[in-house]
Length: 277
Length: 317
Image (cartoon, rainbow over all chains, first blue to last red; front, side, top):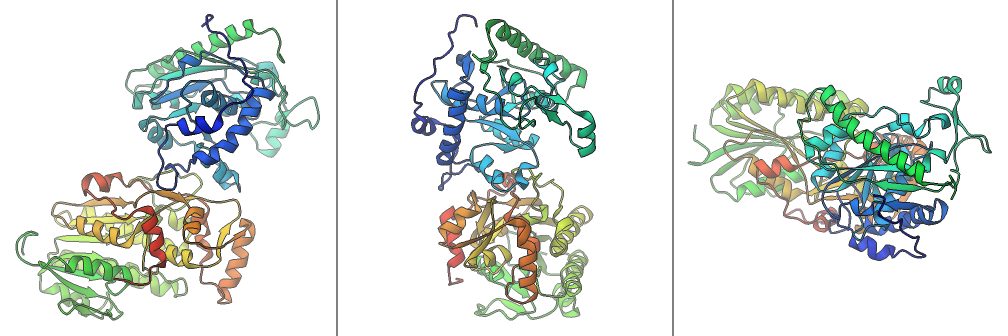
């Protein structure tokens, strides 16, 4: 992986051509069964592309490891209080490889109850996170993004940066069940975008999983710091085995994925000179 | 008792006078081996001469007499009544007690096949729903919609019957929103102009043409077919696309206001839109129809556009 050079930021990405090149199912009105519509994706990609190119000035390594077609599961570390890591990974697999891919990540269950977000996320290809939805998309040879650290990852405090929280096992069961290769992804930069501490008493008071506070106004992590993002896409890992195996057997397979991500994180941290550039 | 393929088969259809009932009756009437008997409290307008029709209550003795001769081969039950303005207790008695009686007759008098038209709405629209529900998903609609309770209960009655009466081929069809000349809740909603929608919500919905539903029923009549089937149409679209295709103006209402406004309008008689149904234009309630496709060989013939436009069709031929 040391051999590949980071891609230079291009001044303009041909979003229209890339959107047309996406391989997606569409019915006579242009919608896929999950409510995705290519024309509406363009707006989202323009915003995500700006964040990707100009705000976070992201660099992608190992882009050749993004499969041009077929089912794939991107598995990444999760951090930063707000899921900008998901946005950046999505922008990367859409903008960087020769064949753009639409990555489908899972939104929280409360999102369908929020006006506008309820349908905008689905127009942009994002799905409600249920195992059934993932299984269906993978069987249709789509690309999904999984953060096995889940809420434990995104809400981790600054002192825990780049230390992976425990991984869930669900993604491994899905990959085994659907014969999906796993592309491990290390995200460097997101873990510093909102250097937060967790105020546990307040979290308990509000019944929230965490109550992050950042040392600059408005003291809640709404706007991320413009850290420089570095993405490392690892070689696809094929997994074989029985999805109904005992948890110990699955845990060993999950550990293998976790180690790959952790070692790419170490490599990335060694390579970078500064958090912001 | 004749087997399905040989002589004529006697088919009893409840709810035959309704618009969907007439579509199904006409479709089955094309096959000369079918002898149709309608059971409905309403008269059947424009009934072909050789279709028998009895204006009776399902719970009455006359309804039992239809089965008593023992020559009824098939029962198609689509006489579930929905009326947002009717008395809930009376509806319950008609729908659930009526169904229980029918099943009793079917078992007592040697009916070989029972097909009931339930609905994909029995699963209920919920934010936690996976995009496509399969037949084994729990039926949760009644939790939030008292009006759906009858339909859910009938579906449960049928599932129990399916296991209890193993010598009868029981088929439960759960079609998505049926559009066409029918006057059901979804198509009545789509005929409103301006159509109320919830500001910031635009769920994906599934629709099916009434004639495709009739086709699915015909396929369910094939010997050997039994079980529960979701019946899906030509695809999924956002609600806004359907309203645009029909050229409707929309009236976006913030969702916290929608219920109070419309329940008041309903009580004043200004609107006949039951507020409990707002969740159907807020959350997804879509189903996976692959089992029907695989096992019944059912595929809708009408395209999405044809199905949507059928809402404004005036003829009910």
